[in-house]
Length: 217
Image (cartoon, rainbow, N blue to C red; front, side):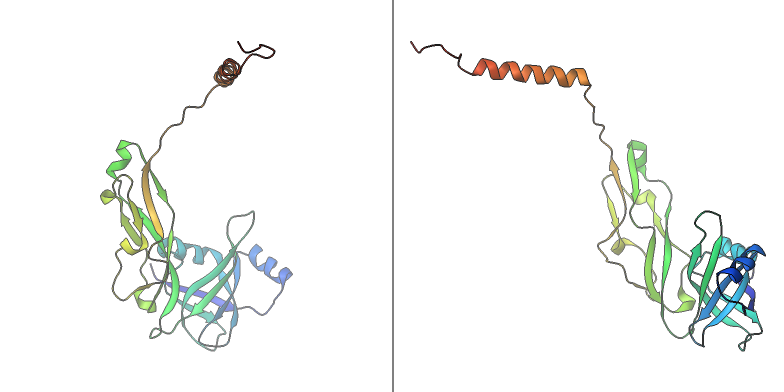
């Protein structure tokens, strides 16, 4: 599948105009980075297919009808989703220079199954994406964690991730990515048991206290 995306110059601005575009199956957006910002309109279905195939952190060739630049190499920098309906309502494309490093995020995927899970261990993923800096052409599709090597009570930190040498990690190396721990079940006491324990404690206090009004022998 080609990573090419087509669009048109967006001449109408504002909430009402964008609502009409979305009703026609388009997504309003903007391209910025190397040139002056350009307002664009993108076909929602074409954009969704690219995202489903390659993710949001992949390089795309954007051709915009009426643009002064025939083709731009871009990456999705940001997007806004509809609060209720499925789909995007706006997208920001960043035009990259292939010779300059950029900051982006890459999803962290757990691969395989830990042997600790068979022993009752529960997997807890604390970090699902990694912030990195690298050349646009070196952006990985994702970062994988081999869960078959993670044991019970083990914590995988950012510093434990395997990355190419040409990628700089921005996140804290000591930040936890994923861990596996055994869940200890706590037996909840019933109201009858709590009442019985409270009664026993009260009887013990009465037995320990000296009787009132009784003179010392």
